[in-house]
Image (tube, rainbow, N blue to C red):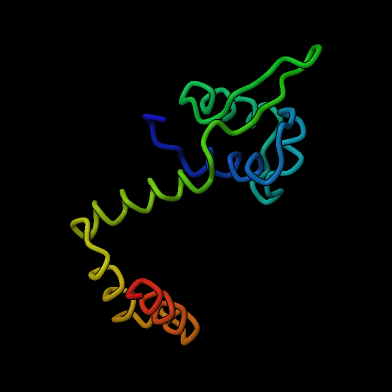
Length: 122
C-alpha cells in the first residue's frame, strides 16, 4: 500500500478489520452513525481504498464483498513509524518525554511502560 489512508477511509477500514467480508451496505450500517454517511459515501471511500490496494473485493452475484488487503497491525506499525519519524526524528524517547511533560501518561501507562522495558531488557 503506497498511499496513506485518510481519517474517513480509516473509519471504513476499522469496520472491515472487525468483520469481513462485507457489502458496502453492511459497512455503511456499521460505520459510526455520528458520521452521518450515506451508502454512496461509503461506496466512494471503498473505491478509494480499492485504488490504494488497502481493500480487495470479490463478486458475489450482483454485489461486491469487501475485505481488508492490509492487516490492522501492519497499518498501525507503518503509521506509528511515520509519526515517530516525522515528529521525533525516528526516536521513541522524545515521544515518551513529550507525553510525560504534558501529563499525558496515566499511572497505568507508566506501569505498563515499566513492565515493557523490563521485558525488553531480559
